[in-house]
Image (cartoon, rainbow over all chains, first blue to last red):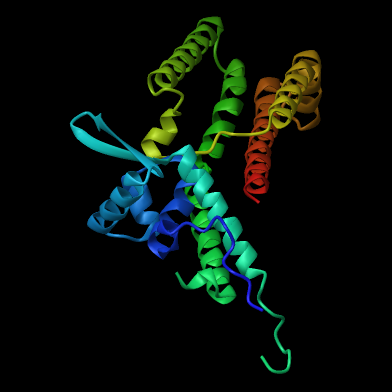
Length: 107
Length: 168
């Protein structure tokens, strides 16, 4: 008998890149675009694209500020985004715990 | 969507989450020079009493007050964001349990009370013991600076552990 996928898995977070982004954002209060880009090893355009997707689903919010004349974009996970990430990780844990112990005959 | 039914894919995804969170935690941690600066500032402020006259002490006190005001105003303008976080581009999470915050406040207050009550006599005795009887404030500054920096580092370490526990 195979158990079905547990509740809480988020379709958007099934993408490894978006999961990495949310992992970082949920570890901090907020961070700059550049910090996030360097931490998840993405190009500016790739990160912008993924952030747009996450922003449209209400998981992150962005704020543009100016430090003198230099624009700085800060990113933070919303309360909803943090909840969805936590449920997704709990669901992943539930699935991962189904791994049978190594060395069982017939595996 | 493989991890929906594949335990191994789910375990890999969890490992990736942990890796990224550890990397973010490490990058958001206070840099070493903040601790070095804390030690130098706290030790230097006390040591200055051995080398400057009353006018100098007043000047140092005025500089400290101005720095505190600047930091306070910068924090207000940044809506609670620490100036250092703005420079570094990341702000660690601030949420800590109330009991942990209360414990830190009580320990800090107790430390200040001990220093005020016994600091002077202990510093003089210590300076005599190490052969620097003319520099009691310098000896006291080094000792209290080291103790303060150690307590500060320990509080950051404890807060980091509490945050990690809250994530589990």
